[in-house]
Image (cartoon, rainbow over all chains, first blue to last red):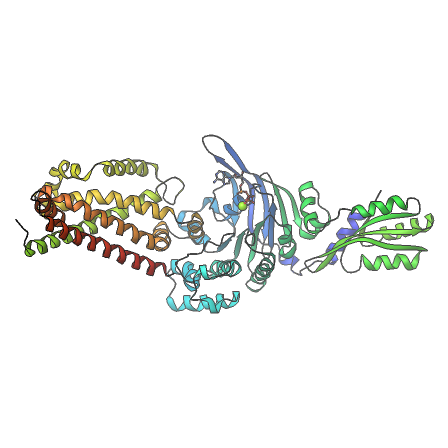
Length: 366
Length: 216
Ligand SMILES: Nc1ncnc2c1ncn2[C@@H]1O[C@H](COP(=O)(O)OP(=O)(O)OP(=O)(O)O)[C@@H](O)[C@H]1O
Ligand SMILES: [Mg+2]
C-alpha cells in the first residue's frame, strides 16, 4: 500500500527530463548558512536565516516564496549587492564575501542580472544600453558593435537598435535587459522577478528566451519569483522560501509531485489545482455504497488516462472521470484525475489494487 | 540726467561678464558639491557620514544668507582671492559663493531623481563609483541639470543688480542709480526690457537644450 512514493521516484528517474543530470555536479553558486539582518533604529529584520543550497552548472534554479520571504535579499548576495551578515556565498569556487573590491568587480562581469523593472537607461538607445557593460570594461569599439548586434539578433530586437526604452513594450524592454546582462558573456544569470511586470503571453515568451539563454549560451540561471507557473515553465530545480528560510528544496518534478510543506502545497495548487470540486461530493453522496471515488495523481505518458481504460477493460466496473487537470512539467504530463468506479464491491477492490501498482499515486477520497 | 547708449552697452557687457564668469565657477563648485551630497549620503555608492554631515549644514548656511549681506561679509575673503574688494571682478567672488551652493542643491535634487534600480544595475555590472557618476547619474539627468543651471543663471542675473554695492556695475546697477535714484523712467523701462530679453532668451535656450538632450 505504502509504495506510492517509491514508485513515484522510479518514474521520475526514468523520465529524467533533460539528459544532463550527469554534468550537473559542478557547482556555480553555493550558499552556506547565509544570514542577513537589517538593523535600523527601531527594529531588526531577519531577512535570511541560514540559507544553504547549491546551484549546479546548467541549472535553471527557481526560488519561490511569498512577498517578504527574503528572495531578493538572497539573490542580491550572489553579486554582493547585499552583503550577508554571516555565512558564505561561493560563486565559481570563490567566496564573494572575501573578495577585494577589484576582484569583486571582475567577478560581477561573470554574473549577469535582470530586474522586474528592467532598469534601462532612459536617455540611451537600445544599442547604447546593451553596450554599456562593455564600455565599462574598455572593450574596443568594433568588438562592442559586433557583440551588441549578435545579442540584439539573439533577443530579436535588431530593428530596435536605435530606439529608446520609452518606445518599447515591457517585453521588449526585458529583452534589452537580457541582452545587456549577457554582454560580458557571464556564466550566471540572476533574474529578480523578471516577468512579474509582464502579461501572461509576454511572460511566456520571455521564459522561452531564458530557456534559450540556458541552452544556447550554456548559462546557469538563478531566478526568483512568486509565481509557481514560472517555476513550472522553465526550472529544473526549485527552493521554496518562507520567512528567510528554505523550507523545501529539490527537483521541480519531486516538489510538484510530493510537496512536503503547506506553503509548497499551496504553490503547487496554484498551478495544478487538486481540490475536489463540490459537484464531486454531491455525486459521492448520491451514490454512496454504489460507487467509490479515487484521486489519481500521475506523472509521465504511461499513466493517467491509459490506466483508466485498462481498469475498464480488465474489471467489471465502469470508470467515469469526474474531474481532471493535466499540465506539463519539463515536457512531461503531470496532473490529477478524479475517477468514479461503479460496479460490484469485489470488482472495485480488485481494480483499486491494480491501480495502486501503476505509475501513479492513487488515493481513495472519503 | 539721462544715460547714454554707451553706458548701456558697457552695463550689458559688465552683466554678461559677471554672470558668465560666476556661472563657470559656480557650476564647477555646485556640480562637485551636488554630486558629493548625493553619493556620500547613507546607502549611496560612496557613503560617508563625515563628508555628508559637514557639507550639508555649510550649504544650508550659505544659502540662507541674503546676497547683499554675503557681499559685504566676505569682503576680506574677496580681497584675498582677487586682490581687491571693489569693481566688477570683485563682485564675481560673492556671486560664486552665493550661486554655488544653490546649484549644489539643484544638482542634488536632480541626481536623487535617478531610480535606485539604475544604480543597482550599474553596480551589478561592476561599474566603479566614478563610472556610475559619469556614465549613469549625470547622463540620465543631463536634461534636468541643464534646466537647473538655467534657473541658477537667471538667479545670478538678479543678484548682479546688487553688485553695484561694491562697484560692480551692470544693468541692474544702472537701473538703480539712474532710474530709481534719479527718477529716469526711460532708463527703468530700458533696463527692464533688456533684463527681460536676457532672462527670456536664456530660459528658451535652456529649454531647447534640455529637450534636445532628453531626445524626446
Ligand atoms: N534594505 C532593507 N532594509 C531593511 N529591511 C529590508 C531591506 N531589504 C529587505 N528588507 C526586509 O527583508 C525581508 C525580505 O525582503 P526581500 O525583499 O528579500 O523579500 P522578497 O521575498 O524579495 O519579497 P518580494 O516578493 O516582495 O520582493 C522583508 O521583511 C523586508 O522588509
Ligand atoms: Mg523581491
